[in-house]
Length: 100
Image 1 (cartoon, rainbow, N blue to C red):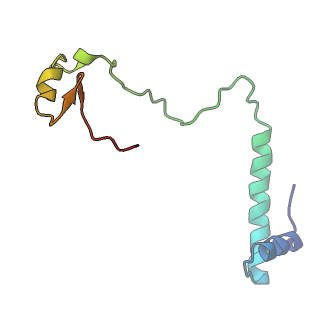
Image 2 (image 1 turned 180 degrees about the vertical axis):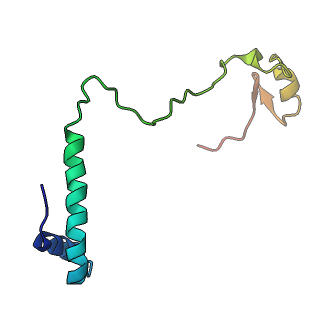
């Protein structure tokens, strides 16, 4: 696949980009080189290759979601936390009703 000067001129017109003829003439070989590289990429055998989101293997480092994961609180301090709440009901913070 390749493009001609007329096609580049038409594309520039559709994109409403003003381009002088000298610039179009210089752009044609550059676009043809890009299209040639794209054609070469289509020849690469990617059968069995998993799609990837990044070239660097990066695994998220997450801790287990357990109550006693933090050694400073060690969990089980619900009553101490709720002691500072203006209203506490059934082990939760009490808040004013906002929806009728």
